[in-house]
Image (cartoon, one colour):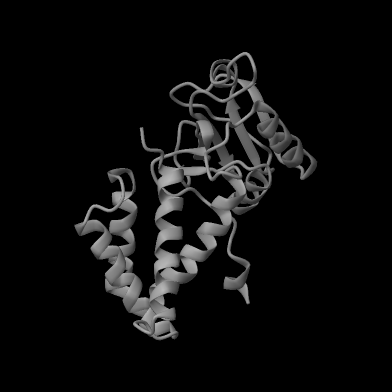
Length: 220
């Protein structure tokens, strides 16, 4: 089975390598507009030629829409460079996925607790849960999932949901610092009232792009 994380990393690095080669050869000028045209055409050609596994097709389609509607402002080169940097952190030295361990999540819970979040891991999340946090930021993880989603060695073997009410970017950043990728399901409505839902997948491998820390260059 082709894994999304590995295939998207392969796609991104291929695109950047081929752009560099095109610029070295003189076929593509080194300016933002020419690079935007290059990546718009590159994405479309990659789809038509089926250069990459279908697991990344929807992501390619999204980039194609961005390129067509935003042109240079789509910033695909900048996106690809940043995604390469992020994936390089969570993939191993051979650019293969790495297992997610319970200790990574436990460290995340501890960090949030230190930041005065209300972290709840001992409750059952059924069809609907209303958990009052007294105005504090809140993270809830179903106790049953915690007991069933990890094997005896503490390795994540099934997706686990994190229900979040509060500064989403903070938890995304703290999770990433633990080499955990969070995949957003909802911003607000979920099984837990007023909480959004994120999922951590085994091997950090979902079927779309996860949430990443904000690119610091975007804030300059």
